[in-house]
Image (cartoon, rainbow, N blue to C red; front, top):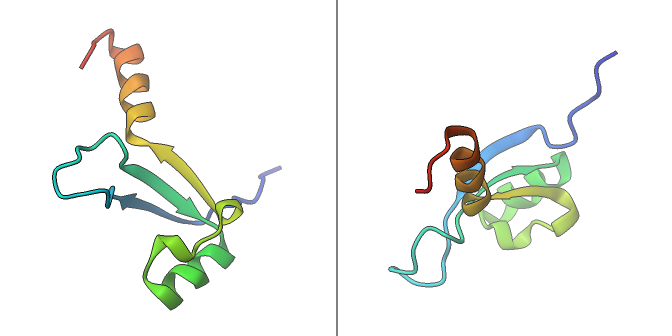
Length: 74
């Protein structure tokens, strides 16, 4: 039995907009629900997507997982 994916749209790479040189720590990979996708398309801005309409995976979490799997500390 297969479970329906709640976040069928993505992945999107969302870059931090804190400033030009603020680094990559706040970047994320984001998947959105159908409703979130409609909001994103209507406004062309992730600020229009509600928290419960997206799944956010921070780049720092991805790097931590990479380091754990590969035994590195980058």
